[in-house]
Length: 157
Image (cartoon, rainbow, N blue to C red; front, side):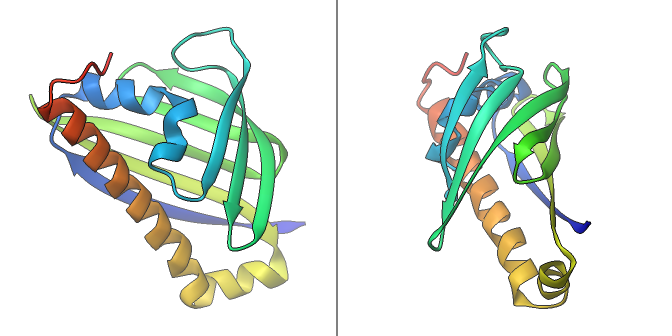
């Protein structure tokens, strides 16, 4: 039995919520802004915008993990919740808050299960901060991608 760890990061993105949602919805493009994610592949193509089941590959510091994730809840332009259904035990959610016409707050919460001995190391020292910092960097990358595309009038639908 493992121990669940959770990391939360937040960012304000200068773009309308529709544009932010549309970029996030392209799950297979996540490796463009998530540095530890090597690939995301659609397994179940029931929906074109947000597939119900995807296969993820994480590659970092010589480690490689694969798992499948299922979207459990999707509220258009508001939130998305998922959990793994094999491999690395993970779950998470992302929330989208319209602050103004061209400003959207994004809150990302990621949880994962580790063996208790490793989880203790992650909670109390630099290793736990490493994951939070990496997630914040990824959300910063997402912000930059959305804002550049929005300001350049690129299609984000």
